[in-house]
Image (cartoon, rainbow, N blue to C red; front, side, top):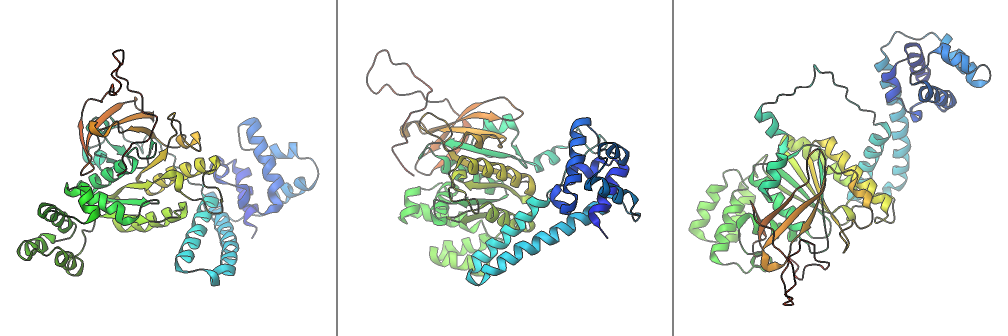
Amino acid sequence: MDVSAAVLHKLLSEQNLDIFSKLKLSFLDPAYSTLYSIICRHYDKFGKVPSFADLELTIREGASSSLLSTIKLTEMPEVDSDIALNALIDQYTQTETIKLLENFVKVLPLCDTEEIKTNLANIALAIEEKTYTSSNVYSMNDLCIFHRSEEVLKDRFYLGFNNKFDAQLSGLAREELLVMGGKRGSGKSLVCSNIFVSQYEMGNTCIYFTIEMTAKEVNDRNMAILSNVSHTNVKKGTYTETDILKLAQSRANMFEKGEEAFQKFLEHKDKYKLEEDLMRNYHLKKTNQMIIVDDRNLTISAIDLTLSKAKSKFGDSLGVVIVDYINQIVIEGNKDKYDWKSQIEIATKLKNMARKYEVVIISPYQIDDSGQTRFARGILDAPDIALLLDAHNKEDEAITFETTKIRGDSDLICTSHINWNTLRIFPQEIDKPGKKNKGGDPNFENSDKEDAVDLPWKT
């Protein structure tokens, strides 16, 4: 049976707009490409799907006319239009999958385990992009205006870095993308770590994709923030007794019945024995975990593969995903990851990923000395919210967040206190610091403009 002909017959006999909205040229047999183009031109001109009679007036001779007559006269089985379209998409998917797998098999002997998994993920992602037709149509019988508070809370996530920000937005909704702009050393990754830890403290599972920093570096920051201990001490391993006690408690809290191991630790005081006991004899909490993915060559398909597995494991408890950072993500087959087209495509794909897995995705991006987006201003087209960070001077112990884009709400500026020793950001709103008059100029006026140089300290 010619499935392409069956679908086109359904399309024209029923003038089925639902089929037309989901049908792609690539799905059809190449023999029908000209006829499909004529159908599309008719829709663009008249605003409706043509009937057989409409096209017979337009196409009076030639191969397309003969093809149209053949489709009209061919006896078609009594099948639902959706079944016919799905059969066509399945047929196309099978053909494309075979092509991609044949190419993959050719290089398979040269691939290691990670490359095999990445290539298979690329194939799955490519097939999904080629066949993506989903659109959800809702009547007013499907949508509610009044929602119970527990339903709202389930689908929104407070980020925890500033109460004013969280209160105005009532948290971020699933499927939203937030990007944070800052120069090198402006605290972008520190904010990400604070959001990451806040999600864990709220009982959620969060994933942190790190590209430039190692998993250990990210974990050192996270543990300093979580335990409220000196980051320098954690990084160097020069702990005080109080540090060890706080870190041990935080570590034990990650495990089911971890308090038992902590109580034993209070007796033997051996921090190495504590961790060994936890990892051998206890299990991590099922829906409340901090997961770090360390990948120097992070790709969209790798993110997709990880989120697919994590979503099936953690379900709705996975709410926020950190990708640190957007300018470093690699597009498969693209040699220049800093090309502006690539940067825009990556931002769009991250937004699509947020919708696909119903999570909030947060990703920093770089700005230049003038405050403009580096590499591609189009990065800001896809996100729902874009923030600029200003960490002021170190002695101010403050970090300011200013929206440059916020979909469906008004712009805001908010400032939080940050402890540069523990790297913890406290969500209570504080006054934004003004610039210091370092030169003793009597005519100096405080300004909210951002300094044009990176911070003099790196954490």
